[in-house]
Amino acid sequence: MLRSMTGYGRGESTAGDRRFTVEIKSVNHRYNDITIKMPRGFAEFEDSVKKQLMKEVSRGKTDVYISYESFAKNDVLVTFNEPVADALAQQLKVMKERYNTYDDVSLNVLTRFSEILAVERAAFGQETKELILAGITEAVGAALAMFINMRETEGASLRDDLNAKLASATARLEDVKERAPLVAAAYREKLIARISELMQNAGLELPVDEAKLLTEVMFYADKACIDEEITRFASHISQMGKMLREKDAVGRKLDFLAQEMNREINTIGSKANDITISAAVVDLKSDLEKIREQIQNIE
Image (cartoon, rainbow, N blue to C red; front, top):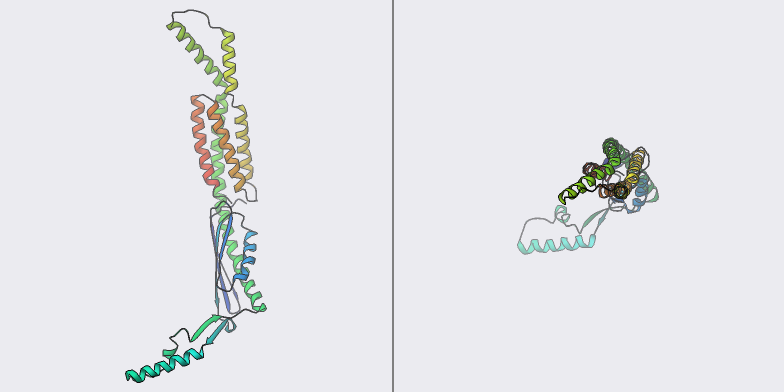
């Protein structure tokens, strides 16, 4: 199903005394750029998370935020720096005697020094690592489900909008196709009128050489022929419509096809020296530019 590159998802999981929260956000990007921000000590789980994401995400700038709360005693390590505490207590007693204060050296005072007590995350054992990875995987899965659903919902809107723009481009192309055969005839009439005007100004009444006139018109018609470009442009529109119905990621294919369409329409505009076709080409370029803008949002 067509997906947008913009999305958001949030998931949570609980494993015993541990709770995991995952947030996934993405925006447009040319490639598949995944950035994962995890708590300290979780670096070894990053590769597993990235592999889980890459199964579902193929394009976009994706940021993943993983937070972790633990109430398990084994996850916390408190260390007491006894030498530092002894030295500080001794110096505080000296200060008390020197300045003749009445305050005792209490635990409340000593524990204000971060050098004495340090609270750290304990090293995880293998069993704990497996439990943590399972919790992260579950939370990532829940976030991915919401994330993908949002991408697909936006993708459906993009598909409808693109189909409408393709229909508009098809209608304008039909106008060009109907006008194209008349260009040579219009050129012939214009050429006869110009020759007649020049001869009249010169005071001449010679008959128009039909053979030479026909040769000139044929040369112009061959030079201004846009049948191939019209056929290729129509084919590109048809291919793009089919791609919009595919289940795989098609953003890059659509982008390439839009470039080819732009090339064809530029050629039509340069070859067909006709006011009506030129006006239709301007409208087609406008439609195509809107199509290319929307394609930039597709995965």
